[in-house]
Structure formats: C-alpha cells, structure tokens
Amino acid sequence: MPLPKEHLYTIDDIYALPDGQRAELIDGKIYDMAPPSPLHQELVLELSATLRNYIREKGGSCKVYPAPFAVFLNEDDKNYVEPDISVICSPEKLTDKGYAGAPDWVIEIVSPSSQRMDYLTKLFKYRTAGVREYWIVNPMTETVQVYSFEDTEDSTQFSFDDSIASGIYDGFVICIRELLK
Image 1: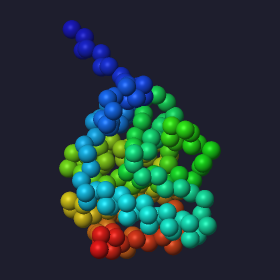
Image 2 (image 1 turned 90 degrees about the vertical axis):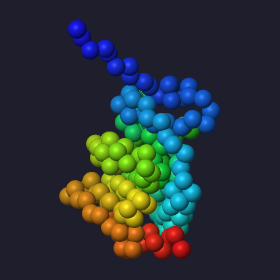
Image 3 (image 1 turned 135 degrees about the vertical axis):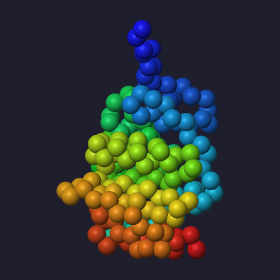
C-alpha cells in the first residue's frame, strides 16, 4: 500500500492564517510559533538597537529588521521565515511584503519550543540559502553559537560573558551579559 502523499503548504496558506497566529513555512511545512517570553523580547530589542547604532555610527548601509519581518528565504512559495533579527545589506531585495532572499546576518533567540528548529532546520536552511552569518542566542544555557558561512565555514560557541565579534562587521564586538544589565 502506498504511503499517503504529504500536503505541501504555500505562502498563501501562511497569509490565510487567523489574525494573530504566527507561523513559518519551511519546504512546504507549516511550523507554529509560540509567543515570545519577556527575556526573548529584551534580547531582540537590545541586540537590534546595538546593531543598528553600530551600523549608523560606521556609516553603513545595512538595515536591521526585528521580528515580525517576513523573509522569503528561497524566493519561492514554499519558504517563509521570520528570524528574530535580520540584517539586510541588499535593499533592492526589499519588497512591500518583506525580503526576497537570504539576509546577510540572522540572529535567532532560542525558546524551549524552538530549539530543534533553530539548531537544525533553520541552520541548514540559512546556510544553503546564502546567509553569511548566523547566531543562535540561547538564554537557557546562556550561550551563543556563531556560524560563519563565508569563505571558510566556521562555528564557535561563546558564553553570555564573552566578547563576541561579528565576522561580517569588522570591529563589532558585543557581550550579551552587558546588554541585560
């Protein structure tokens, strides 16, 4: 007996969700998103503001977009994500609905319900889509996993007490613990 055919969803299905229901679409499968905790939101706010301020001070042209912000990762109708923080350096890919393509830098803040998604599914999707740098900030373990997908791929884990440098912004260094004071 053949296996039942799996239903593939599209971005139209995401837009048809009831108001207030947030979900992401990866390879045609819908993943519901839980509401963020106060600590999650504080980290998104502080990281976004610090990044924005750094880029402005250096006269950079990239922009920082905190969630909810639509990213059409593979520029198809089967992939729609809302990274916690997207750093966009190609403004020509911005549309009135979001961003068509891979952000240059993505930061995800882990929650108990998103660990598998952030460490496995999204890691693979971001890497293959062309994201240059990916940070996974985990408040539960107080660690930051930094992935660089440029010339020489690299992955390093830091604690919240460490000074963490960005691979795509020379001179940008941040300590997560300092942000939470």
